[in-house]
Length: 327
Image (cartoon, rainbow, N blue to C red; front, side, top):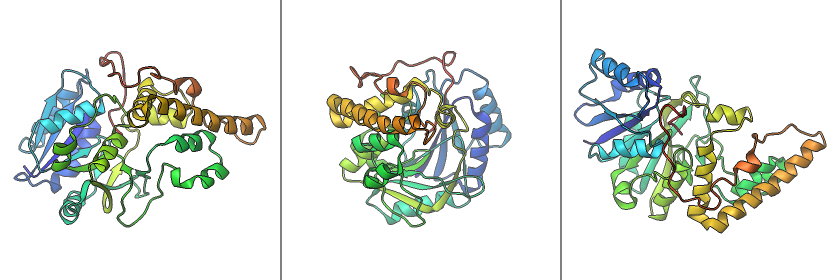
C-alpha cells in the first residue's frame, strides 16, 4: 500500500461520512486506503459508519477499527498507523473536507521533496478563506507574548510569535497543524510513533520537533487545499474563544511539552514568563484599555502537573468525557 489515510472518529460519524465522500473520487483502491479508528465513542458511531460503508460500497478502501479504549488523538492515530504497512500516512481530522486534487498534490510534493518528512496542505474555511495552520515553536517568549496580548510586545518579539501568517508559496515552518498532515514512512521508522502521553494538543508540535531533530524538514504545500471545520467535533476551541475554562488535558499537554523539551525547570520558567505577560494584560484591563482575553482559571491551570508533567494521562471512559479528537 502506498498511502494510508488515518481518520479518528469520536462521536462525529456524520462529519466522518462527509470527509469520506470528499475522498471517494481521489482514491485509487490499488494504492490507497482509509483506516478509520473509532476511539471508543460509546454511542451509535460504529454501527452508523459500518452501515454507511456498506451502503456506499466503500468496503474495498475503508477499513473500520473499533478501539476498546479512548486513548486520545495520538493513541488513535498510532492505532491506525500500526494497522497497515504503507509508504506514507495521511493523518486527517474527521471535521475536514478534502478538495479535489489535494491527495494527488500532496503525493506529488512527497516525491519532489525527499528531504520533507512531513507535508501539510493549506487549510481553509468552506468559503475558501485560509486558516493559519503553520507555526513557530512554543517557547518562553511566546508564553509572554500570548499572555500579554499587547501589540508592542508582539511586535518587539515577533520572531518568537507562534502563528505564521498565511503564505501562498511552499515554505518550511517549524511545525504544522495535524488536522491534515502527510508523514513519510521513513520518519516513523526513525523517530517512532506519536507520543501517547499527550491526550490532546501539543502532540503535533512534539512530533514535528522530533522529526526536525532527526534531520527531516516540515513542508507546507499550499497547492493542496483542505477544508477544516475547526472545532466541528469538540468544544475546546470554542471554550478558548469564549474565554471559558477549557478541558484539563489542554494544560496537561502544555506542561508535558515544556517539561519534555525544556526540562521541569523550563516548565516553571515558561509559567513565570506567562505570568509576566499576564501582568501586562491585567494592568491594561484595570486601566480600562481592553477586555480580558484570558480564560477562566488560566493562571491556576498553567501549573497543572507542574510536579510530575511527564506522567502518562489517566484514560477517561466515554461516559465520563465528551471531547474532540482533532487538532
